[in-house]
Amino acid sequence: MSLDRSVLAFAGIMVLLSVLLTAYVSPLFVWLTVFVGLNLLQSAFTGFCPAAIVFRKLGIKPGSAF
Image (cartoon, rainbow, N blue to C red; front, side):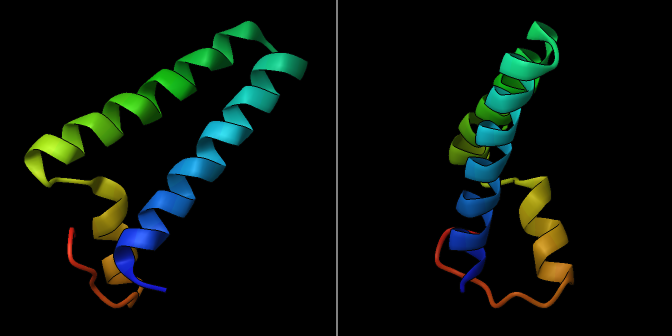
């Protein structure tokens, strides 16, 4: 799996997790969804993604976006 797909998969997991936490634990977990969305949006414009940096250090092969 490339770095790009790993970042997208991680973002998807985080969004689904935050929806579950919002529904079953506290409505304040919706802010986690907002954070993930904002991070995806800024990485689309700037090319900077903290998750990509971590995944790269873990040895995942680079993709075309990151």
